[in-house]
Length: 601
Image (cartoon, rainbow, N blue to C red; front, side):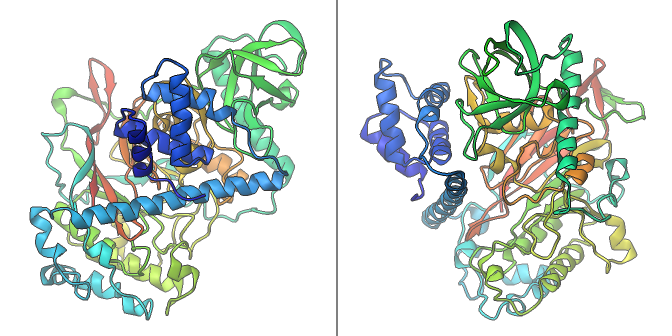
């Protein structure tokens, strides 16, 4: 399918003289991706839907109703399960094509825009010499270590990246906007550690591809039973009935949501799979009686309803999951008048090179920003050597992947030594030199000096990090992208990113989707130990290909900083100001996040 862009949809809406805004266009774009529609097709469908309801206005709520009543009921192409599998793959590929098209569109717009004051001199440099002399002088060591000629004989600096506009532009904000100063102190004294000492917990051997199906079943069953017990005690439910029990009265059942085929979940294909204690059967679910719902494969739910024949469960009530409590340190909490100095945390996610060149100019620019702003902690997510980069895929490099990675690490550690900031490295499934299994073990850097080792933390994916007394949940796996393609909803009144974040917190898992996406090689034994949340983090960082955001979801500040590069052009990074110790106001918890921003590189 040809990629769809926001401009295509806007043009079609203008044709029908339909009023719209950016949010509604983004929502229609999302629906195009999920249902494999062209811009003109979805606008025509909406026009017919709106006309049949007295010219219904184009709003987010009405689009949810439109998706529930029209798009979810459109017939899927018939074929074998293998064909459905290919359709699903094509769906994800179409999203990738769309992302590339948006990047090209953004770069074209940037080339016509007026450069910002501070960036004019740099924007006018030639492709042969994309960096100013001042920038090279400041970062001699990193730029020499990351010389493109040493990695690929055909490497040339990215022209589009060098000509990008909007550098330093704040594109998303959270909390206080005017008050905070976005500079840290580069404090080595900030405590950064893995919660519950899990730093070396994933170094032991894995049994991936040697897992017994019985063991996988036990892990999934135990998840159903644990969450079910929490829901039962919270909602005062006496007991759960078997899902396939034919009864005329209303019953309460526990199970896991799954799809009746290999295709995408929709309102007509929902099955509820019970745990072993409730019979282990799968029963189709009728959702028509529910006023609102948000479901995805692998979600553990409690439903109330009837099953007169034993063949189909008619749900009338859906119980939400319950998040875990927040972290409570043993030290006495501060009152509001005893607030300590805020800590600045910066975060960025790879790839750190443009898509058409194996040059690390974006990473060198990030090191420049770190030295200028002096954050107290900098969290860097992989990929550092991206397996999806064209030159990596074609093996057009002159050195080993491990050597490229080592130079990358050396450049970051040496280049930021003067700032004194603490560094946290999180691996990615796309790091070509590393183990691509989930949960993923931390990097192994054996050549660090004693001083460097003291300020570098090697984290696993996923993990829970403690900065001061503030907990950070970290994962580099694109759960937003994977769940966004599978989740269905109706009448919730909330946008998709907030729903997915809430699902992660209430399902108490860094990857609640089951079965996982094809690219995720799941080790269920390790996942049970290290892929679950032991508490609700104060801050949850989930980098994704999808649009950046910072938002509060049931008390947890959720951040998608985006990626440092988007194709051939620059992307974004994030920064937060946090209160390192818990603060109480009248005895109640206050979010430790003072302010947050997503900024263009």
